Image (tube, rainbow, N blue to C red; front, side, top):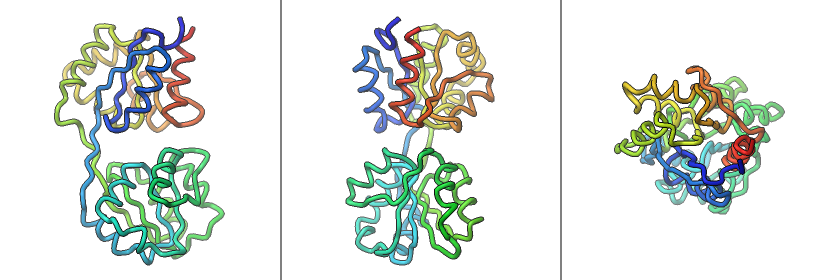
Length: 260
């Protein structure tokens, strides 16, 4: 076997975030099948607009995804101009950092471990007592980051920048479920816990059959990191994860697994 050569790889991430994965799979001879189990919907929530008003008084702002950045600057176009000149910026990983750079802002912190836990580790040696920290994100995200910052003495302003929802049209996902059960898919990738849990919810009465299809080992399963791996493990599904939690690293790890 030669990795992805002629193999069908399921991609479950939102369509606007799937381009890099599609390109990598295609470059290595695979056939990407994009069936988003997740949709991102930005909106001007009260908490986001409130964060915009606080820009001049923030000591830190933390971006945990490109979507949080894009939503903030969409609804607060003058955010950068109003931001406290001494405000420092942290991002969760290199992709978010690249989007931040597109807005002309440089990150002060990019953790080696691209998780909320990794970000918190970076703050252990920084005095956050009484510091004001803005965190735009989806409210479906875990509370590990804001709770950890509060324990360090910070005042955290959570702002709902976008919603993570199941797709309005689930037909592509339902076809993906059918193809997995029929053995027509060689591998599938997950880039967040919701991409996995939404797949099983959309499967409906075929969920058990879907889980068994994964368990029999005919479909290789890849998760971007241990947080994404968790809902799979809870269902008894084995998955591979890369040492570096990026889409490219995940796909390269998957390609290596498929080469044997």
